[in-house]
Length: 135
Image (cartoon, rainbow, N blue to C red):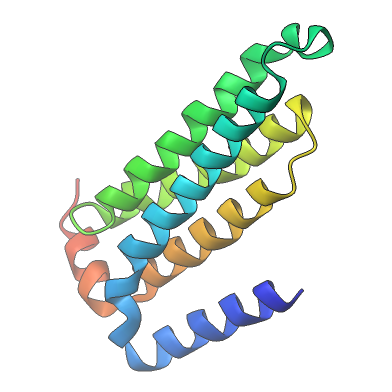
């Protein structure tokens, strides 16, 4: 609950000042990294356990989706719309995938941080201008 409040205040502050727009790519990369590291940890922790072997593909999917979110964070400066889309889809779908593989409470931070980064990128005047020229 506290993390959601902090993120909401960050987005509100960014919309008012526009100075936090530089944080959007950093937040996006961090959120994607949280997801990828969390999925990697779950795969390492449960990879050899017989009860997890049948669901290993879902764990690998969560890792791949975390890396998709990292790519979205890297694209926020050059292509903010595509970056924001990759951030949101990668982190939210990765969260669903990791929870089908393993109850992983650390991955819950990835969608929160990634969605905040996407909102910051889309609400910033500088990235909104860059996104307006996209096809």
